[in-house]
Amino acid sequence: MASALQPPNLCHPRHWPMWAAVGFFWLLSRLPWWVQRGLAAGVAALWWHVIRVRRDVALVNLRLCFPEKDEREIRRLARAHFGALALGGFETCAAWWAPRSRLPPHEITGLDHLAAARAGGRGVLLLTAHFTTLEICGRLFGETQPFGCLYREPNNPVIAHLMSRLLHANMSVAIHFDDLRGLIRALKAGEIIWYAPDQARRLKLSAIVPFFGVPSVTTTGTGRIAALTGAAVVPYFGRRRPDGSYLLTILPALENFPTADPEADALRINRLIEEQVRLAPEQYFWVHKRFKARGPEHAEVYGGV
Image 1 (cartoon, rainbow, N blue to C red):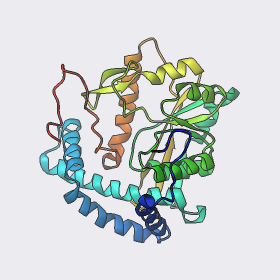
Image 2 (image 1 turned 135 degrees about the vertical axis):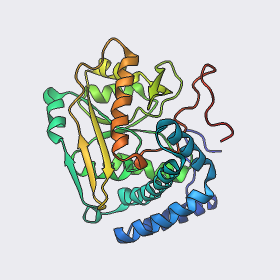
Image 3 (image 1 turned 180 degrees about the vertical axis):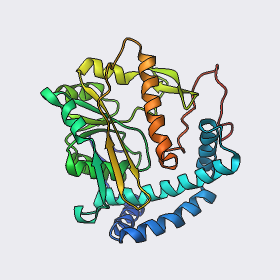
Image 4 (image 1 turned 90 degrees about the horizontal axis):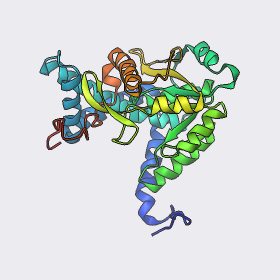
């Protein structure tokens, strides 16, 4: 086993299948965009029938968050979500490897809000959420405005190696999600850091706060980070349009944030994310178990899923 000081040999035969898969997806990224979108529709139909665990998680989440919808509407939305997931996979290939000239059309609104927030050299937490457009919108945004990010290292060493190279080549700074000191240093230095607080773990800086009216583990760390660094918290969201283009929206920096009430701040952020989810609900990441690990006082909603 490779030690922390000795990285794995990525040329070893056990990694060849993954390298072959990477090569295959690189080739897919060279196809015309309309072809990729057509392939994504077929992949989505396959995933719906094959990846039953994630399908069931999405259905549970959608039933909880949209109780006003009947079962037919819920299943229609879930299938649309699998279409968005599959398309997100092809978008990731484009985000990683497509030349600038082959990127899809897009529009960015609100850059003036970002400029205002950065006045005086302030750092910025670019507050967003886990949408299926995450990778492509990050690439499109980065073509206009350099920024940094928090990241989790994938378990597969080949993917971890590729992601590390891409992040350090394309981001102004890449910070591991556990490196709080590194995040604070970057924000104090005036960096813009992409930050998505909507997939929290049950830690000290977390609370049970409603998300779509459903109790959910939610980080209270956003306000803490803003208070420690003086960074502005600027909401940013990207979504696909029906015509195949992308809209990236930057909203004004949150005013009167943080407050003395961390849970109220967390609820405010959840409600902001909810507003954006409702604009394109199929594009949010519903296959994540958003309502797990809430403690014995809350019922387990995923059952055997």
